[in-house]
Each structure stands twice: as structure tokens, then as C-alpha cells.
Amino acid sequence: VMRALFLWHGVEEVEHKAVAYDLYQGAAGGGYLTRASALVVATLMVHLVVAPVFWNMLKLDGVTRQPSVILRGLNKLYGRKGILTGMLPDFLAWFRPGFHPWDTGMPEKVAAWLAEYEAHGDPMRASETIYCPAPVSEAA
Image (cartoon, rainbow, N blue to C red):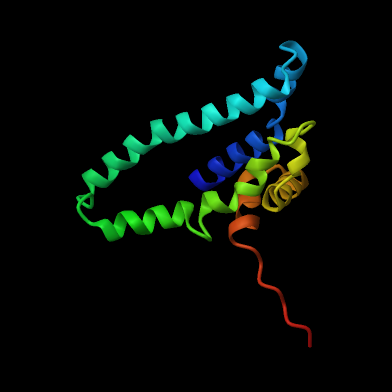
């Protein structure tokens, strides 16, 4: 149930990912320099806010004095095949003049969830489509 709830929420976020951007462009007349500098500041702020939370969780788990654990975690985020490193091309695209959030498209799993949900209106079944896909039958 929680997985279905989180997937539904994630899909909802993707569906309206351009709302704030469009509002910024239309209502505030937002320009490139403000957008680019705000993205840099916001990225730094997220790291500054999240880092102490992560450190506290590591402290509660008793691993702050285990450098290998910390290095593995940093590698998982920022390493050559890290989660955030993998997002770098999409992140850098935001700095392109004329960029719009929909230029990054719709993630494949979000599109699959939406298609399944629209077919029957059941978020649980849509969730299962993403995380428990039916096995591919072998041709005889």
C-alpha cells in the first residue's frame, strides 16, 4: 500500500513538474540569470540542509567512526556510477538558455504506471506493473 502511495505521489510530481517553472516565467517574468543562479543556490542549500540529517542518521546507527561506510555512501551518491552523478546531464540541461522542464521528457516507469492506472484506475495494480512485472512467456 505504501509503495503504491509513493508511486502515485511520484507520478503526480512528474505530471506537474513544470508548474512552478511556468509560473516563474509567466507571472514573475523570470529571466535566465535569476533561474540559473537560483538553481545553484537551491542545490547548495539542499546539500547543506540534508547533510546534517544524514550525519545524524549515521550517528544514530553508530557508523560515524567507520570511514568505509561513509565513503561507500558518498560513492553511491557521487561516484562514477552514483545516483546524483547519473542525474548530472539532466541537471546541467536546466542551465541551457530556453530550457523547459518538459524537455527532459517523461520517465519510462512513470509512463508505464500512468498507462496501467488509466486502464483500470487501481494504483495497487499500477504499482505492481512497475515492481512486479509479469514474466515474459517463452515462445514455443
